[in-house]
Length: 114
Length: 117
Image 1 (cartoon, each protein chain N blue to C red):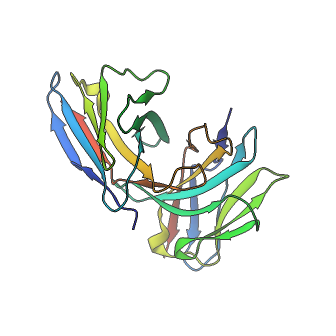
Image 2: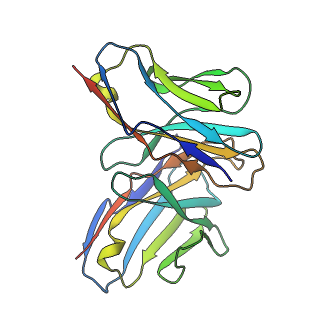
């Protein structure tokens, strides 16, 4: 079975500092990994994905994530946080079989303080 | 591109009535759409997969007679919450992919906040 763990319910960071939102996963095959952001009372917006290739993937709004197969992790990072980055972030995974749904983590609330 | 429009954004209904939520893919065709439910401070729970021209596939524990899904065209899927009860109050979100295949990301509507009084 597929699963995603986001160990932190809340991450607080000062504006201008680097941020990391953690994600670990479990799949039976090769993972397809995604990060989404959700603003209040809105749907989810796609940030970036890892399918294959380079372990470091870059996405929207200056975010990036690093795929680490040995640690089964896909942490979201940004070198310099903005107050406008404050939102709820979801990591999601599915395997490459094509027959399984996308499974979401429980979400991490990021708060960037000016 | 890849815009998914969901309507209404908010709805309040009385217990026992039915509510229909529409999900449209505005600039692409979607043979498959996905309906999620999100509880406060919780993750998204996949309710069902909507298939154009055929029956929806429901996840375990989701009542298909209560949550009616219709996917009549390549750009429209509807979710009808029948005989709504207060415990059905939640945030419902639809999504779709522009391409088949799991490597393509999901694009989400803005969600519908349902409140049953």
